[in-house]
Image (cartoon, rainbow, N blue to C red; front, side, top):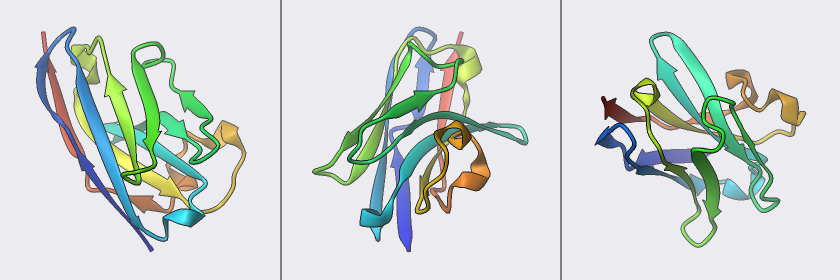
Length: 126
C-alpha cells in the first residue's frame, strides 16, 4: 500500500508561482513512476511525471517550460514547481504513483497509476 498526500495549492495571480508537494508513505520502494495530474470538469490530464531514483521526467506540452517536477528523496516526496501560471492552469491537482513498469509513452494515462492522493486546488486569477 502507498499513501499520497498533496500540499501547497492556493490562489495566485497570473504570472505567479506555486510549489506543490506530494508526500509518499508505505511501500514506496516499489514505485516506478510518480506523476501529477490535474482535473478540469471530468477530464483528468497528466501534466508531469518522474521515475524515482532514475530521475527521468516527462511533461505535457501545456506545461513544458513552465512547470518542473523533481524528487525530494529526504522527504520521500515529489515536488511540482509551477512558474508563469496562467488562468487556464486553474484545476484540482492530484499526485499519482505506479508500482508496475510500463512504457514511458503511457505516462499520461490515469490507468497506468495504482495510487492517488486526494488533490489540492490551484486557482490562478487574471
